Image (cartoon, rainbow, N blue to C red; front, side, top):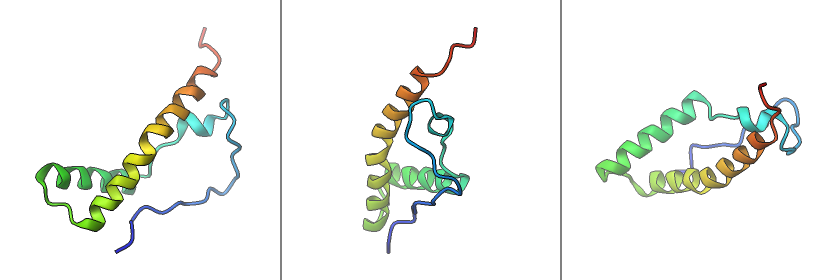
Length: 81
């Protein structure tokens, strides 16, 4: 079974500039968030199958770099004063 996480191309192309609001406003869809929660629950219970483990590993491998990108984008936001 292939990973249930698919890249969904946005309707508009967003450049990867740190000031682009798309970067710091990005969140996973509700379906993807639910799937990740389910995978984490199964992982804690020790009941992941091989495909689920691969899907969770894929999410985990993207989490850290994306968190760094978002942190960098937040640094470039104008102050709220």
